[in-house]
Length: 191
Length: 191
DNA sequence: CCGTTAAACTGAGGGTGGCTCGAGTACTTA
DNA sequence: TAAGTACTCGAGCCACCCTCAGTTTAACGG
Image 1: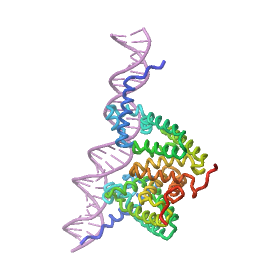
Image 2 (image 1 turned 120 degrees about the vertical axis):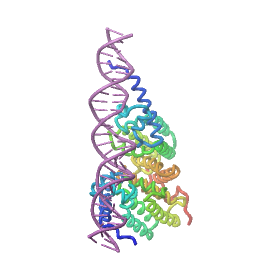
Image 3 (image 1 turned 180 degrees about the vertical axis):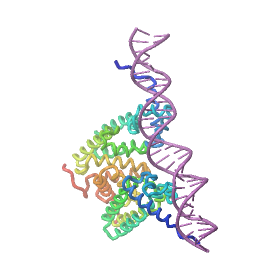
Image 4 (image 1 turned 60 degrees about the vertical axis):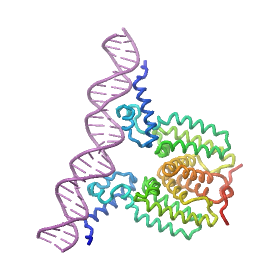
């Protein structure tokens, strides 16, 4: 029979997650893992016992938060296509901007199946895919726009927010979405 | 009177620049400076004697290259506004993508007067400003678009190219520029 | 309550990299 | 060729990543 998990193990796991969350918010996802272990009053080895590498720790910190994000994304299915697209991109950009450096991990995670963030990335891309294909059907968005375009836009937006003002990032994202829409200058979608 | 600079100093300087260029191309601007010193057959201290920090070294590597870039940018003054804008952004994105990590240094350099890259950043932004204001006058680009928008777009494009395919980055940039243009959906320019 | 057992914890240690500074070297100049 | 100094060297300190052999401690069965 399998034993019940040890109480100290669970306690350390939770402490590590809590401190990692705080530290990543303050210093970004590139923060010192030894520092996180220190703050959690735990030896480095313990941290590595629970989370084999930085990505795993970031992934764990994000897990709950991501659930809420994905739920919100799916709730957008009812909205008008353009609204849904704008809000989804905005949601993800704000989410990613909570932790400096996350945009990079996400952008790299979509192509790396070994990444602990891969599942989250594909989930994000899938939701974007649904929204964008609905928008194309509705004739709102150009038919040649892909899910990859939307995923990339989200990452670029999040990165921009780390290196410029939130307003500047929002402007750029907004312009880009304008560019994705059907207009007199762009190919018309099938009705 | 000031002496002629020592021959060995100049030799080391040049070797360091050459190796730094090669290494930054191969490994990005985050590469080990100790490794660069080793490759240049020089002690670390010598590297730091010539270039006090990583940004200074990157800036020096970029200097000549930047001149060519700026010249090309100014040569675009004759082109049609939209063409000039697209080509300028493309030029800078390709330039920045030569060295992984450069997009970040540039994005941060525009706000940091102490950065050795600050001058290059403002120069880039200035050229963008000229092109965009000409395009606005011509009624091609929305009147609310700023030089900062263009600078940010260039950085975001370069970053995207580091984390996705060149094609994907080009698509996104292209869509964004579409969004900057005057169309039936956006505010009309004067004229 | 107390062994037994395995899961979990610990932290020294080996590796890499950034950067400094005092001692030594070698180039220029007169 | 000697003086003077610009330049070079690299050991050394610090921070970080990650591992693993030895130790602790919680869970379980009697």
